Each structure stands twice: as C-alpha cells, then as structure tokens.
View 1 (tube, rainbow, N blue to C red):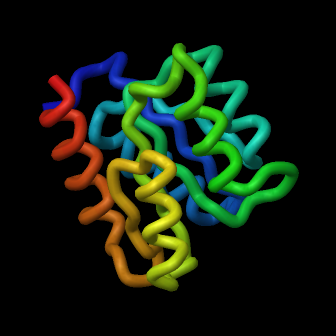
View 2 (view 1 turned 180 degrees about the vertical axis):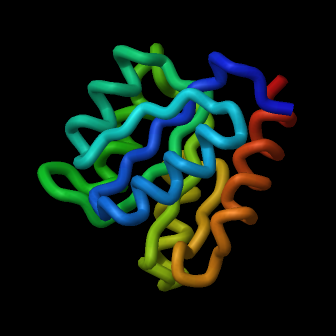
Amino acid sequence: MPKKNIKVLVAEDDKFLVKAFAAKLVKDDFDVIIAGNGNEAVSKAKKNKPDIILLDLVMPQKNGFDALYELKQDEETKDIPVIITSNLSQEVDIKRGKDLGADDYLVKSDTPIQEIMAKIKQILTKKK
C-alpha cells in the first residue's frame, strides 16, 4: 500500500523507539520526519504536512496532549490523523487523547510495532 512520499511524523523522545519506528517505516517505504519534543512536533507538522502523526504523550518542552490540542486547533494541521503511542494506559488518559481528536490510542508496552504499522496503514486507507 505505501508509496514514497507518504510522510509519517514520529513525535517521540525515546531514542530507541525512534530508531525502531523509523527503521520499520522506511522499510515499509514511508518518508519519516522525527520530532523529539512537543514543540518540535507542532512546528514540523506545520512545516512538513505529514500524512499521519505518531504522537507520544510524555515528552519534553510540550507534552503530547498540548501538542495534539494545538495541532487540532490549527486549520493547516487539524485534519492530519494522529495515533497516540504512549505508555500512559489509564482510561482517563485514553479518553482525553481521543476527546482531543486522536484517531487512535495505542499503549506502547502492549502493542507490537507490526500492529502500529498496520494501524497506520488502516487509518491512511480510511482517509483516502
């Protein structure tokens, strides 16, 4: 399904996970944009207009909830699908993420990387 030029913004401060996500995404022919904190995630989303965003919630400078809120309030980025990838697994966090406009919420410790890739493809297929 993926073709080059499908851009995935990975907003994640864990360098090991960034490498794992990036390696798998590149292998599956996606273009990868990396943001290491919430401010960078918002600015790179506005600048690069990714097709989808993987968004961690616990990041420096601006947390993922605040970044998601800002992205969904902006005319240029509000329609970009967002998958929250976090280890915050409380129901209140999941509800808050979805209420802010996330398309899905995956708990990293419970979700294999292949499942995250499948979710990206599923959401991109639905978006078309």
